[in-house]
Image (cartoon, rainbow, N blue to C red):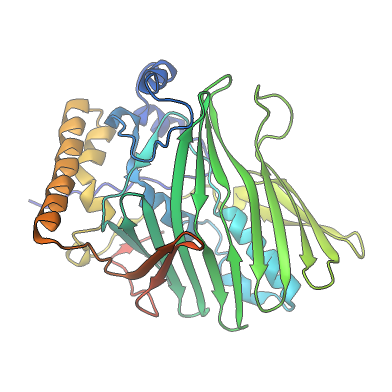
Length: 378
């Protein structure tokens, strides 16, 4: 019997109301409040187990990957086109903004299992992720474009905490984008996620992001500004920032806009303003990846690990979904007990991983280039 693979559409600009209806449990707000009734404010909820009614049919690993491989315009390959270091940094800023996607309130992706992977290709871009730690949850990403000579390395460690009226998920870990043709490395961090329960339910990205080119000394600072507590005002999905020379401290550009619509950059020398990012062009109309070669799909591939659960969620068969999720969790506990009994430590297959109090988590890819994948992003 041929395996039916469930691959859901990427998170994109459209609300995808039909899909949201499929995933959401009835009386969603009341049920969310019941989940947190015994959780104290300030608690770390990274290991919080959600019933499948509150899951979207994809892993968090896939959500991270979509930020890199799923765009309507190939803005990544355009990064090499800038004639000056400033031009290239502005393009990197636009690409970084494209990695921020709208989320649906009331549903969350699966917590990836230890060793889970996601391997997808789009044109010359090959993307590979691996869950390198489960407690705490840490995801590693490596993406390479051999034609453009571009490399991306991410290490994501998310710490969600319940505040009493919301969940604040702080995303830790270094992100690097390397333009090898220009000998430039851009280091950056991620904004944080706010899941507001009261008084106005919704999701938003917030916090400060710094993008620094090590070789040129140019720096971009971005602020993602969330709505006010009561949801009033025009700050929804607002982004503001500047680009400056870290040596002279001179401000070269100012950045302003909304990450779900358009973002502009203003040159401080000549006051010229231009649009550098249009969300409608980049993250709308996105399609689900397709499996081109099932035999080459690794057993650890996220779409295989969670396939039965995703299928049950889409069909709203909640009893089957509970059984599928329970089976996955029990299998993970069984593997953990086996390792403990043998005195073995789990070792990632695709990354060298280290962690220290000073530098946090660091994930270095073992291979120089990511191979072509059997799953293709359209």
